[in-house]
Length: 112
Length: 113
Image (cartoon, chains in turn yellow, green):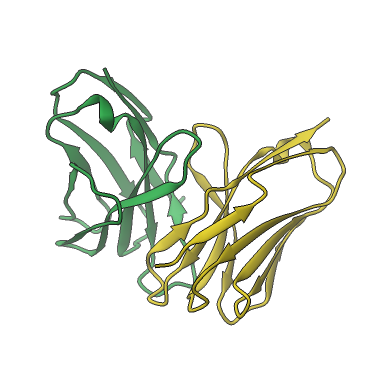
């Protein structure tokens, strides 16, 4: 059974700092990996989607990498802003490309 | 604009009532999902559907039921609400052949008193 772990569970940084969120998964036979953002009490907003054949994806200040063989993904946030404060969730898709298994998330606080 | 909609956004209801949480998407996605999330906790899949008239139970046991009579509509029903059903319910959808990933609704926060 696929298990997804995110480290750290919580992170507090000053504004402007670059930071890295980590995600690891136990079964490397994944179809894709998706990073989401969740604001308190809200739904999930998709940030980046990486297919199993890809190594990284970039969107603005966000860069996500994938190392399938080692079962790891990172989300890099450049020049963090207070508006980046949220919980960041990593989810891996099974080989069928359907069901997602979620990590517990990293709660990020960016202080002005 | 293509999107996924959940109603109601918040619901407070008494024990024993029957409730239906609505989820509709305008993207033509054939796959739809319901997740349950307690505050500060991870998401758990409770139901999913691969198309019309197709429904399956997820990883987390749930007393709810779902139906998929139309591609765009995937309602979740609780026949008799209990305080243990208090949680946030998130609906999502995706294409049959990703690479498009999931799209989530804004969620329904249910409180059973």
